[in-house]
Image 1 (spheres, rainbow, N blue to C red):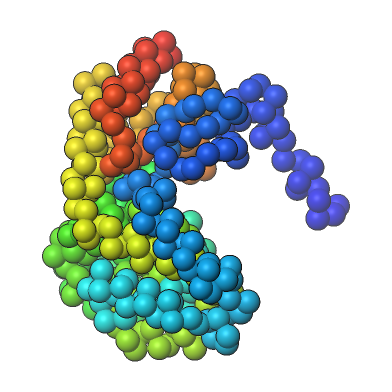
Image 2 (cartoon, rainbow, N blue to C red; image 1 turned 90 degrees about the vertical axis):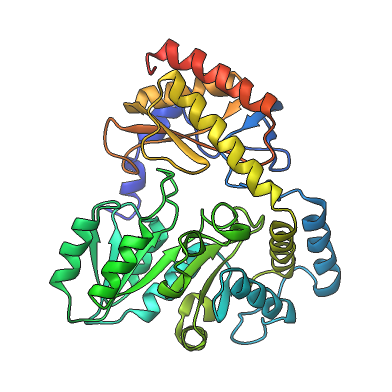
Length: 392
């Protein structure tokens, strides 16, 4: 036995590759837009998280280019030592203002932001309480913590209360996705906050897929429900609506000060490149100055939800621009992916262990910059292929 035996024994992906149904690591040779080039072919992008279509906005690109001219391409160190630029401070001020918190702290990736706060703030003898469908970065952050992780059934408030009752006299943090990345539904934040108050818990919302989508000016889940004062920690990413890469934690100044001195993913990682920081600042300004982008995003969302439902697709509990189509077993999902790709549509199949067996998804996601013509084209292809596969 050696370390590489597990690699040798992993054959499932190669089997799928030989069958021509491997949907991962597809190479795109164009900008991330409503249409992309895959294998030299123009393809309608229905699998992007660029909800506001800002990755190729002229102002975002210009801000990034200007930052490189001023600061260079990197910081060559961590925020803790030589890697804090004035543009990082400006970015954090803009982020705190966006989500209406006292302070914010930028990390090099969204994944690191979740690792950085959860592994740091919850210690031995304390509890992390998570929704069973929380993002992998939350799960890994809990595993790195010395606290104990407890889970409750997805958006099930009775089950959450069951968990809280068992740990009512100890410090605890409830962590949820504001918008769930596969199901497309929104956390029941009003009920969660009521239970948190009842059982003396604190609340953290991962707004990776909520920023730019819900709340005033796309400010996220807490603002959407008018509960910003009840949510202690807000996490967000830059790699979706904010058109770059990175992530942040927002909350009170005491928490940010503590994280700056104890959060290992912050202290021991190189800081966010200046071009990325500048592009996020520009994206925030556009979100505020062009509210019609969010309005158009929701117009497109309603159109596609209605279209899918009228065809007979099961879209589950989706209520956002993330619209999953429940198609059944894994091979049906792979076949549907391949047939849609052949018709010029880029989507993402979701299979176990990300979903239960025989409940595989075709995950679609929509952008404010999709045109009616593009969406009508997509609906036509989904109807044709859904009928051919017996999904609708």
